[in-house]
Length: 98
Image (cartoon, rainbow, N blue to C red):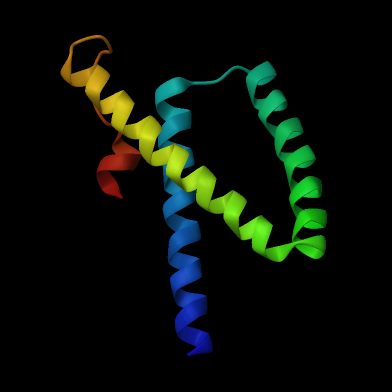
């Protein structure tokens, strides 16, 4: 069972990495934006580390809230594309290959 969980977690991490790489290709963030994201990640990492040590159930609940918000955001984004409010940009080669 342990190796199955490792494989599942590795696949999930790869999926998240591909989402990030696709976003970078489409959005082309500036150096400032990348630096800002890295700073936010550093702050969140430390916050989450201590939250998990002190209240693991709450930490898992936070992740659930983030996942729920992601679904809501993607749904809203797709609705904007369908309504013609946002351009439906073609997928970059990295996304097509994945």
